[in-house]
Image 1 (cartoon, protein in one colour):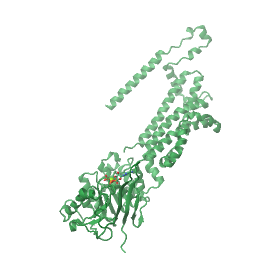
Image 2 (cartoon, protein in one colour):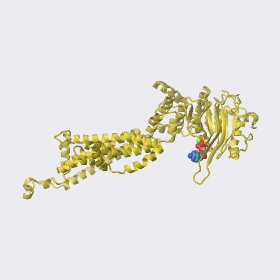
Image 3 (spheres, each protein chain N blue to C red):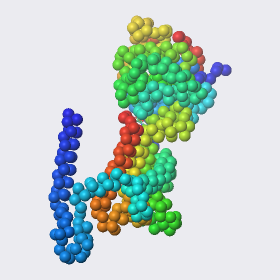
Image 4 (tube, rainbow over the protein chains, first blue to last red):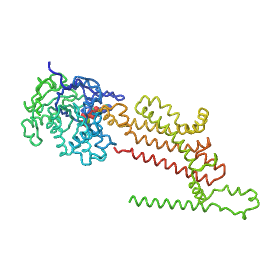
Length: 307
Length: 276
Ligand SMILES: Nc1ncnc2c1ncn2[C@@H]1O[C@H](COP(=O)(O)OP(=O)(O)OP(=O)(O)O)[C@@H](O)[C@H]1O
Ligand SMILES: [Mg+2]
């Protein structure tokens, strides 16, 4: 028997009760996928399809209407320090300085640490996101959007969770900072056995970072329709990745999905020939975009996670 | 620019003050000397003269007198202004802190629990509009001590703004910040102290500031009723003595102390304020 995957998402659905007179709203349903330990998974889909909702359910902050999330063999029933979250809107505590926002997390994680240990650990992560030399003493309201997001990233990384949940973490960053922090993210991730689940709108970012990219159809009744394996060896380099064989196949596949199929497949089981709720695994880099219904994600060692 | 505006405002304030005082002084009839008095007036011992509104110069003179020895104590009906104010402040602060001790935790409870909010709401709605002085007879009957009754009246009048503002502030804490506490596995007590309290602090302190203002308004009336000591009693006592100079002086003192109390809370408010 094969070992259970690190994270199992099984038949997730989110429905909102009907507003007076209307029909109940099903944001998404039949969302099932697995994530292996140490895997880096990105999820892409149009605005409003329910990505943040899925992430919040994984975090234990929101409850699914149906289905379950199982991490390390136990069902997720509430938030935990094992799952660190970078929220879409930063969610920094505005009355604390950037530094205090980070120590807030570190202290919660390591209640037994001395003040110096907490400070030292926090500074390590603030340096990682390039927030030092006085900026760390400022309140969030005195920081730019990008700087706030970096504090939020430092706070999540500093607690060293088993699973990192990132909701568009680089959305507010300029291209330069974005690149630096992407590199740092990869560096921190590859030096650990952390698993990352990240929402992004940026196709190139997803290809650069992810082992696998989940594609969601449009809502309502959104689903995770495809699981695209990024067969590009690591370490990947921003400048060179575009010259890698298979890069454009993957990129075209993603863009085509977002432009056309996400709409075509919306609210139906079309394009899911296996009839199961699992997303179809696609490896555009290997077979030029042909679907490969035999191998399901997480069932296996399909992912050679090259680090 | 801002500084020059402030300077101009200060100049206008002083001009208004000088003009007002001058008008008051000018409109006040001067005291006739004994030779000028009619026979009737002499027979009345000059009582008519006493009943006039004193000019500001008299009030300033009295203020100087009182403030140069604020803590003298010549028996129950003749105590310095400092002693009277100390009595009033003691009652206000005692009642106020008792109220805070109860209002803030209960406000937290109401703010956190929609059930408790609904359950307690009818009581709050009925009790809140009652004039604090209406409680006085009941308080005197049950407590049987006029000092404690005055403190109780302060307690009852300062509890509502603090209770309501705390509940409002706590209920309005952004969901995101509570989620931050949840993802960091903070217990209920740590969440309350490290996230909800600082998040709701500006609203809570606003309630505390309103409460202290009301308490200072009510203490004067309460002390006029219960008597004995305090600035309210002092005003009433001087009125009975027909010493209007002292009445005006004590009115001004009440205003100044009220302003200082408010300023202190304004300072606390600024300290807990944060910008989103
Ligand atoms: N309380 C609610 N009642 C009804 N519908 C809701 C409620 N909360 C969220 N929704 C709906 O759920 C859907 C998913 O929201 P979610 O925030 O997960 O989208 P998203 O995929 O993260 O979008 P974006 O990319 O813009 O962040 C939205 O269409 C939204 O309208
Ligand atoms: Mg979102």
